[in-house]
Length: 391
Image 1: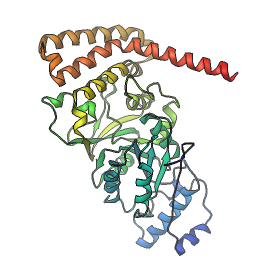
Image 2: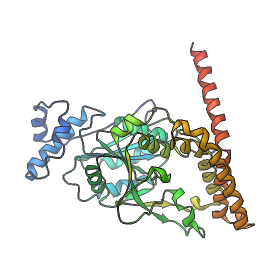
Image 3: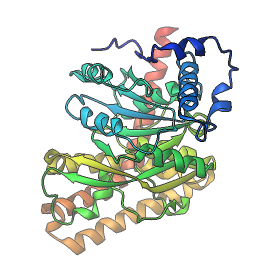
């Protein structure tokens, strides 16, 4: 188990003669930017030497964007799920010209997650650093913030420990980022890998479990339509995150029984600053969904938390001066949806799992403004008390 006081980073380079040659070369601080993308047409030996130079440069400068892309796996007690994701990354194709890294962010796990990473490092290619970092603050939002700080690439792709990317996911992610320079975020084409058959009419709520199927062509998300990709399988431009996303996220901690909405909060901050948000169908991925995710209790808790977080994500999508005007509109619309839902489904609005999830979402969306106001008051009260104690 890792020390919870901070990240543990282990990066290695091949210990052959070319490594001594690299050590004798003096590179400018911006060397990664100058070297990036110029080696594709060089002879294989020269490409390999260039890759080693960039890896050597990255090793001594955490946070410097010297590589092409960083792939981050955020995990909590992922001892049994993590190996499949790492095997998918081991088998990546089409990226021989890329210089990239894999970072596993252990989000306060209590199982053997750290040992899994250590075991994989023994068989891992040294040309693709496999790094391990420990984030003691519970919550995927904190894990992603940690990863952004230590990533060494302009593009950072995020995978959950139950996401299995296709064999060309990394190459497709890098290619799209190069072709769309204004894209601050772009998401994957995600299909479910179900342990058991989902409940009837599951397609109505599948998007809430990070399943995204929007066709075969790239799609620019229109800010007016209020539709965004999930964090699973998303790639962000690191500078867009650093310039747009605040250090403290409102939704980073639990909403009700679980975290919800912190990924949308991040994307909305970038979209508000003018960065484009895209869907990239070339980044294919399977989301493994165990039978426990289809249990009624789990689904109702999930939709309760999503509903409670909605006020925050809704207000981020409108200008500050518009918020007092749109709040009652959202409230009336949610009440209208509840009435329409009850009329349409009658008794099955409660007994049918999918219909009950939708009703739960509408109901807690109504409560969300009041819940978030109380939550904000409590956070400010705790900060004030801490300030008094520290003072």
